[in-house]
Each structure stands twice: as C-alpha cells, then as structure tokens.
Image (cartoon, rainbow, N blue to C red; front, top):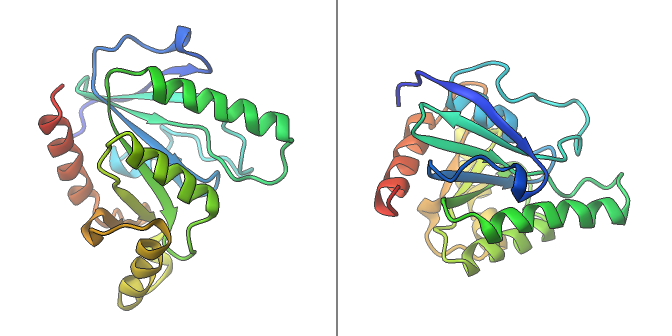
Length: 198
C-alpha cells in the first residue's frame, strides 16, 4: 500500500475521547515489549510516528493512527509488564475492554507476539478473547530478523501449539528492521477490511 498520510489522530483512555467511527479500525494487542510501535512505524514507512519507549509498560493509553484517511491502526496498551501494581493492571484491562466491547468500526484485532519466545499465559487469554468475538485470529510474530529463516518453522510451531491455532497461515513472521512481510500484512489487512465492509 502506498502511504500518503499517517498521523497520530487521537490519544484516549475512555470512549468519550475516541475519534468518530468513520473509518474501519485494526486494533493491535500484545505484550509491552513486543514491538507494536515498531510494527506501526515500519508498516507506514515512518521512523517516529509511534513512539518507541525504552521502558516497557509506559504506554497507558489507546493511540489511534489515521492511515490515508482509509483506516486506523489502534495501538492498545501493552500488557504483561511485571513492575506495575495490580491496581494499574486492572485499570489497563478496563481501558482495553471498554474499547473492544464498544467499538462498532473495529474490523480486526491482531495479536503481536515475539517469534523468539513461547507466548505467555496472558497472550493465550488475549488470543482466546479475540477468537471468542469471531475475529480472524491473525498473529504477527515480530522480531523475525533476530533468528535465521531456517528456524522460522520451529518457532511458528511453538506459537501455533501454545495459542491453539489450527491454520498455520494465520501466523506471519515479521521484521520491523528490514520490513519483512510488510506487503503481505498489508494485503491481509486490506482483504479483512474489504471482506468485513468499511
């Protein structure tokens, strides 16, 4: 996809702050350090659109990114960072849940996992939630540049078994560093939006 516009449109913590439901939205879920910001930047070919924090768990808001006035990427607060209180974790959960339960223009939730590591129990919970709402269950396996291509299948198998994914093609190895599989992911997202209406 040719990117002519990519901007942070809105930062929100509750539905009163969300932008109008005039564009289809693709939400991104994953652990705090999985690379959601890097994924967004590489997908739109911008270096600093989504800020990359040196401290996992720093993003505590829902960030709406307008792409070409055609769709939005919605970066959900990362989960799984140990150095926060139970109260904060519950608050983050409420922020995420309110968005996922109330947003009519949400077309897909993509789960991002680190290809090098077995998904966590929180990843499993998130993936089961995604599937329970009849979303496709697409998984982006980030940081693919950190391992050799010969090891992709081994790691994909681990992810597939842990998350209980039947269709292996739903797991896409991805690298924000060399933009590996950017075009493939764009094609999938385009098809998802077109198939589910906009």
